[in-house]
Image (cartoon, rainbow, N blue to C red):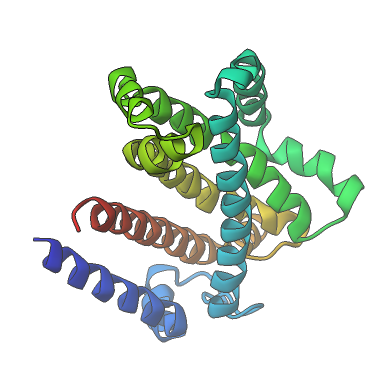
Length: 242
């Protein structure tokens, strides 16, 4: 079953790449579906370029959120950092309370248009699941297991990296997975401030009432989210079923 899933993931990835490169070949299909529209294929930027821009936005924002979220989760679960647990939870929740559009509006005057404000908004919007799952994963480790490890002479750092983190990694990866998928969808808003990505055809379609553009953007974003979700899931399965 695991081998079948790997093969299906490879085929899905190749199919997605082919669709991105050859989406113009579906011109006739879109024209039959939307005969009143012209043009029907978004051509202001190439689709491979938009996928690359979208990927960079998600990788940078989710990567920073993962590093920050995991280390914050570790910090507040240590004896010296437990007093900061309510503060960290509150700040992380605040990041998702603000709509991404509002964060973009606040960030643009400070850092300008383009990718930077989008990455900031995605970072703030994506840290909550990672922090929450890191805390939940570390606190799920049995105290008796920790006591046994300390009784064997392991230092607190050895206990953390050799015991707690491996045992909590499944829950932590689930948080990273959720955060990343959220960011893939939310990154489409970056097109409104010149960040590019797969939101460009969606925004253009909304502005000029071109349903074909909207469909192209939403389908590629949806398939991209499914692909990344399957990749992270496969990584998690490989990690725990070696």
